[in-house]
Length: 117
Image: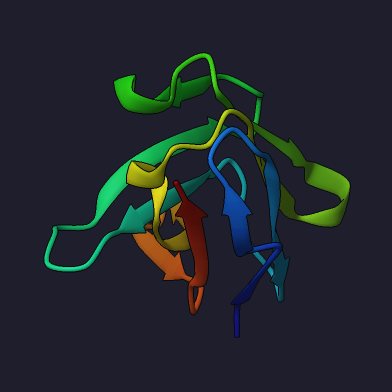
């Protein structure tokens, strides 16, 4: 049974930084994509950033240049470094793992990020 546990959310002022972590327990087949999504109140869940096992990344336009996704394959852990935070970054951030060869998807429980103006 795979479980994803996020940590690192919280309240920060605009312009500040936060670092999210997502630790995956259990056996996850490789290669896989680890990513972060977010959902603000009354909005659809949207992709923030993803990273492949090999390290290639993709970002939403709204976070390019401010957020950096990384991973430690040995620890099955993904990170999201968020700098220059804006109030519009306020949302629940969810960790996600997709295993293309098996068509499986895993979600974390979410962590709240609140950016005050």
